[in-house]
Image 1 (tube, rainbow, N blue to C red):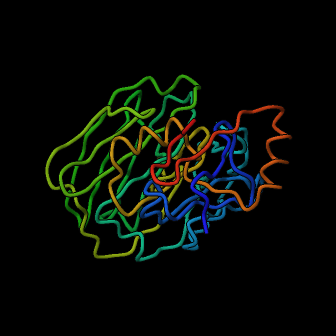
Image 2 (cartoon, one colour):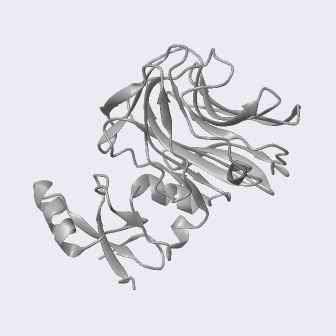
Length: 267
């Protein structure tokens, strides 16, 4: 049984053990969810689908937007992957994460990959431009870009959605680029998730990545904006004792209430 007022804290990640409220529409269709609370080792998939992210090379840990995050040195062999899985054959989907960098080289933030003929390089960064590129079965599906000064060593949230009517890139909750038309993908193979890397090597990410999520649907513009303003609005807490201790440790961070039906703040 879920209370319709589930409290959460807006400026810090929920603690280990917090889970997303399955009754909230904002959580519909999550297939991968990495809060990156671990601080060491591999990253656990909170979606319950077992897409554990395995750290390769010299990927380490650093200070994230809201807590711990993964730090990518930008060298060959430094990346994070999940296993290949048919659940990741996302016909329509959303990829979303936070990133921070001051690098000027071409770098890949997040992608789905099977081989060079079947890959979706989403949120590709290239000299001040965010790019999206999909090739399925050897055929290019979409390529578009949005300009933003991302090399400012400031945290940004980026999201890419694709589906039956268009693909779109959002930065910090706002639409920056889109391509109209049928942007659904037709995977014949099962890809894996890659963070900070595009196979083959040559586009390794140099910077930080925090809290990536994957959905099996194209999230709406209002949902993307909400996840920018209130990144943890979809979480509920295991018990009030844990919540009280967490808030007390935060030296007075405000408690907000989550509308059970809409996933946003209420008074």
